[in-house]
Image (cartoon, rainbow, N blue to C red; front, top):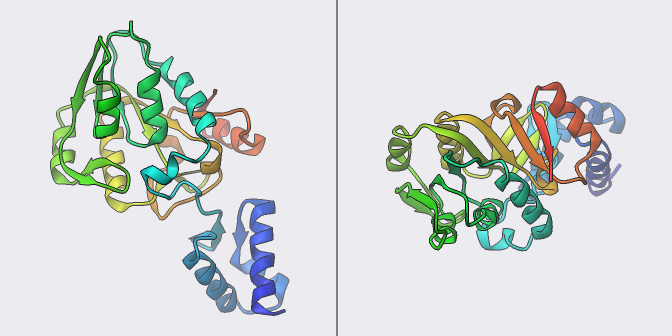
Length: 251
């Protein structure tokens, strides 16, 4: 089998099964595992999959910058944002992550809601600037322009003084065994730090993030108590989340 044909077959198997195992591919194609690993490396370099130990998973389609992500599944993100906004109760202190879904969530908060929103996203802060009853706490630090959020030591130090009811976390990958992931190492550290400051973690995940993986792990699937998804989410993922003890909230 030619390399190009083998790669097409790998991508087809990945789309069909949601993951591929290097040993299985080696046996199927009658080639060495080194050959398969080389194929996976080259496909990963093209952004077509995410390598993990022993094989590969689908690469997240949500790896673009903030502007690019504004064009991906915005109707779905708005529905998730509206549903998540209903989870905030009067008097709550919540941490709202960066990202397009979280900005939509900020815009969805009713004008009568009295609460405090802590965020490291200037975009979220601006979206709430005209809200009459929301107290906004903006965490400072170095601006990571790709995602328009603050990161770094200053941001993580500021988070140590927060005790929140809920952290609404954005991710680029949700996978039952590989956990939650994102595309930047510093962002992964910041998200872990924010999760540690909240009594409850709620993950907001549009369809393109489900069953996918990104290079940097935020934490295992059990770090969240709930995941807000839309009705197009695959049943297999719903069952896997439920088996892990994570509540599935449908938008």
